Every structure is written in C-alpha cells, then in structure tokens.
Image (cartoon, rainbow, N blue to C red; front, top):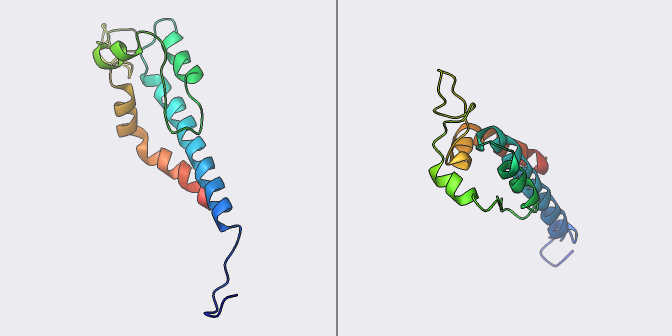
Length: 118
C-alpha cells in the first residue's frame, strides 16, 4: 500500500494480457470457422490454405493459395453453393467472403470474445 491508500495488484497486467490473448485466439478461430461457408469451394484448397496460413492468436487471417487474392476480389459465385449459382439454388460462396461473413456474424464473434473477460 502506498501513502494514498491504493494497493497495486502486481498480477493485473499479466492477467489482462492473458485474457486479451485468449480473446484474440477466439476471434481468429471464429473468423475462420464462420468464413468457411462463404469461401469459394472447388477442391477445398483455398479453404485449407486459410487454416494452414493463419497463426491463431496473431490477429491476421491469411489465405495462402496462389489464387486467393483473385478469388477474393473476382469470384463470380457461380459454383453449386455460390451466390449466383444456376438452377435457382443459391448459397453464400463467392467474392469478399470475409466482409460478407462479418456483416452476418460480427455480433456473435464479439459475443464469443467478450466471454473471455468474464
């Protein structure tokens, strides 16, 4: 205790860092999991490249397939589960998958992250 009557909790910083680290891991994992139905799918390599190219807890999701950038910006979504699939069947797969997933699922991801601080 100092002369002002304030007691410093020496473990405060470590505890908060651990909780923030856990929350970041939850967010990264949830983003990958919830993005899955939005990622264009032919062989599954693009989806798997997001899993293998991401370090959970880093705060960055990396799709490492050589064609990932092009698919993100240019995919027409015409596959069997695509946004613009033929035959009246539509799905979620197509370009800007992260932005579209975030618009649909952001609230749930934030809720999962907040659980780390309870």
